[in-house]
Amino acid sequence: MALGKTLAVAGQELRALALQQDPGGPRVEGDQLGSWETGGREPRLAVVSVMCAYYGATPSDLGLSGEPPASASPEEAQLPAPVEASSSSLGARADAARRATNATLAAGTVAGGQIDLLDERLLLLRRQYLYTPPEAMLAQLLQELDEVEGLVRERQTTSVHVRLTEMTALLATLIADSLMKLGDLRRSAVWYETARFAAEESGNLDLRARVRAQAAMLPYYYGPLDAAIALAREARLLTRGRPTATAAFATMAEARALAQIGDSAQAELRLAEAAAMYEHLPSGPDDDAFAFPRRRYLLYLSGTYTALGRSSAAMKTQAEAIALYPAQTGIDPSLLRLETAICLAMDRSATEACQLATAVYLQVPEEHRTPIIGARARGVIDKLPGANGRTRAAMELRELLALPAGPK
Image (cartoon, one colour):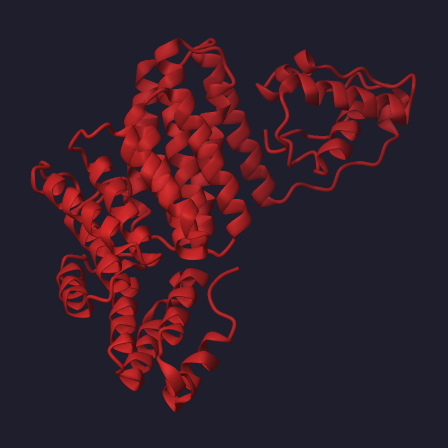
């Protein structure tokens, strides 16, 4: 899956590689590969060697021992012994064994209780996502996705398959967002594509819209803005005018992107639609990465007002939003304060704007000080009028942003 291949294709290519290395060598096919993946009998050592060459991995990476079985031929027994497994690889093998055991117990389908437990873990991750540094969060998300995908590969009832596909879409979206925060834009983009594909397969209309609205953040921050508008608009249209949190989110995302390209008339129209919709929404959770609480609504409203040049309204919104964030949170309050600095820059308070941006940047904990924070801080310099970009405060901010920052 990581290589974008089906089981059948991987089996064919493994067979071709085995024949290339030794015309009389081991046989490898898709059915056998599927059996090895799900915890069946391990392949012979010669086959393990072919698989390692194909995947560019060690036996431990593949969850295999790489040791000759008791019945190994003399030629196989003479092959070099594998490197002793480290504690981390042993942990990976333990995880693989547990997943294989669960799959066997499920007898080809997942029990309702097992799906409920996965749902509970995913909800916990969605809550942790709001305050956990992106690099640490990425590792947890990938581990959870590996578990879900192991179940997706098994035969499932239609209802179970739909729930697992929805989980895949949610996890892929959070993985894409984490990569965006870390500045890995190429991987972020392709993971958003995976999230959209999974959402489409699930058939869940709200999820399809939600994933698109989330995906609009990447082109909003890094361009092109036309793509951000298109994704947000698609999300809004998918909601079909129903007053839901996803509809309000998509409409606000479209308004913010429209404001960035200077389309004030359309931006104001979308703002009015979102405000009318949001007023009638029931109160929802505020500790879920896929919720749209008031503080996040205000974050998008702040971005729209700032782009429209309505500095006074923007700064009032920023102050209101910041007051709603808990003590343990992520980078949103910092993004709001950087927007305050942008407003100051547009109001020709250049020194104050740069000093505020510098203070905000330095106050962000290092594990959260990722490229997206640097990009927003540079936006302050970009908004400085005339020769203000050459002031001492601007030069100091520019030098600060030139330093290496955040996890890679």
